[in-house]
Amino acid sequence: GTCFHVGSGYVVTNRHLAVEPWTADEGVQSLGQSVRGQFRVTRIVAFFPGIRQPFVVRLRQTSREDVAVGTLEAKELPAALPALPLDSDPDTAMIGGTVVMMGYPSGEDRLMATIPEAEARTLRERCGASAETLLSCLSDRNFIKPLTTQGHISDLEGRNIVYDARNAVGGSGSPLFGPKGRVIGVNFATFTEMEGQNYAVPVKYVFPLLARAGWKTAEPSEDQNANTNSNQ
Image 1 (cartoon, rainbow, N blue to C red):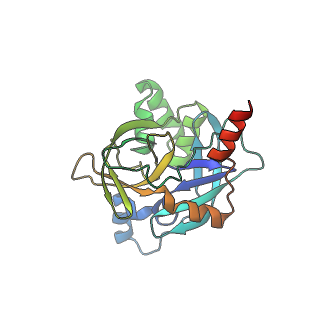
Image 2 (cartoon, helix red, strand yellow):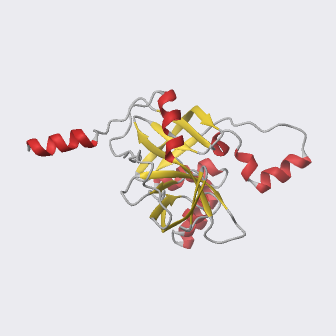
Image 3 (cartoon, rainbow, N blue to C red):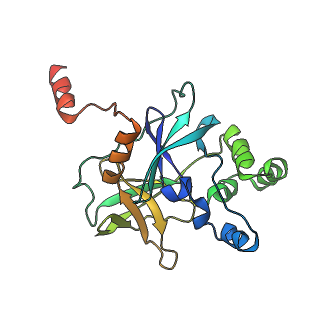
C-alpha cells in the first residue's frame, strides 16, 4: 500500500491498510480459511523515495471513511522528506476536473519490474525472505520510486471521489492531487471489473483526524501570503 507525509512526521493512509490489511489480500484470506488463528498487525513500516532508512509508523487515528493517520517514529526527520500540501477548498473537486494520482500500485512487484532483470533476480535471491527485507534492499539502492498517473474526476458520489487515473491493487492510500497541485483525496479502492473506476476519500475527512492526532499545519494562509508578497 501507500502512505504520504503531510508534515511534522504525520502520515496519511487507509484504515484497511493500517488496521486490517488482510481484508484486501486474497492470498491471506485463503490462508485464514485453512488455519486456526487470528491475524493482527505487529509492525507498520514506511519507505520514502530518496531516503534509505525505513520508518516505523505509529497508528494515531482512524475513521470509518477508510482513513488512518500515523506518526513516523524518528528522533529527527530527514531534511529531504517533503510534506504534501492538503487542499482545504471543498469546491476544488469537480466532475471533469484533472487529477493526478501518485502511489505504489502492485507494490514491490512493480518496483522490481523497473530495474534490470539480472539485478532484480539477484535482489530476489539475496533479499526476498520477506516484503520488508526486499523493500529495504530496494530503498538502499534508491529504487523506491512512485508511479504517477493522470485522469479526470468522473463522479462525486456522496463521500467518494470517482476518477479514472490508472491504478491497481497496492495503490491504496495514494494521494490524489487536484488542479492546484494539492491533495484533494486519499485513494481507497479500485473497481477491478471496470478499468479506470477508482475511488478516493475527500481530504476534508482527513483534517479532523490530523487535528485529533495533534498535527499542526505549517503552511501560511492565503491572506498571510498576500501580505508577505505586498511587502516585498
